[in-house]
Amino acid sequence: MQVKILGSAAGGGFPQWNCACANCHALRGGQFTGKPRLQTQVAVSGDGRSWFLLGASPDLRLQIESVPELHPRAGNRCSPISGVVLGSADLDHVLGLLLLRELQPFHVWAAAPVIEILRGQNSMFAMLNRVDDQVRWNTIRAGEPFHLKSIAGSDSQICCRTIALSSRYPAYSGNRAGTRTNFEAVLGLVLPSPTGKTLGFFPQLPMLTPELKGLFATLDCLLLDGTFWSDDELIRLQGSGQRAHEMGHIPVGGEEGTLRQLAGLTKPRKMYIHINNTNPMLNEAGAEYRQVRDSGWELAEDGCQLSL
Ligand SMILES: [Zn+2]
Image 1: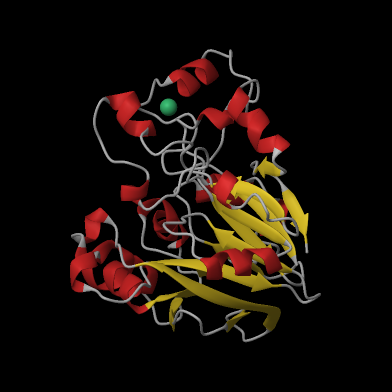
Image 2: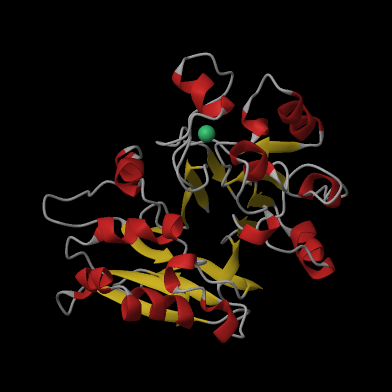
């Protein structure tokens, strides 16, 4: 299985258009030891021909153009992108779907409440079904594996499993967490490759249970929520706002951070992804970056490729 990381930032990217935090300011001024990042996007393929997107980032058009494997190959309208797996209805995870509206047939796999939010509550997504032969929506259930297939039916040999992580739906959907009891608002994705190796994609980690720790220990590569370094990161910056855990993210640093909680995790290649522009570990000259690297973790970078 080929894995391409096309974006590694949280919503807003790095730098973020309206942000002059220390990181964004230094990056714009050419004074930053670190890399700019597009919003988180991963693509996987079992055969190198048919590709599947994990989420659909608002930067998707640029991300597709940056990778020749994702370009159309014949003279007519066509795309090697066969489908999109949605782990949530978060805007930075679904807005890219609207950039795929040019009457192209492809699959979307998502939990029923996520499909309902997109198709039932947001009329713009009807652009994906203007004609009969366009997007095919497939309902997935947490824990039930499904095969990634092309629209013509050929199997990619990649079987995707989903892990229910949260009942908290995005703010734009009316904060319906209270009315929805299932935990399919945020799904982690586990993808075993045809060779038996396994990728875990958890760009949003609201909780870390013993079961999840056990699952992570079996993976060959883990792409994990690196949104915030500290729980009060945005509050310290802005003077107000939400804590990381209130936004559904366990921070990287600190006593309760994933770096410490997953210190015993040895098997997988461990990479932080979905990194917010305010996160001090983006600064490769800083102590936080050094702590991450000394702990055996990497920061996912745009353009990074893995083979599993
Ligand atoms: Zn910033």
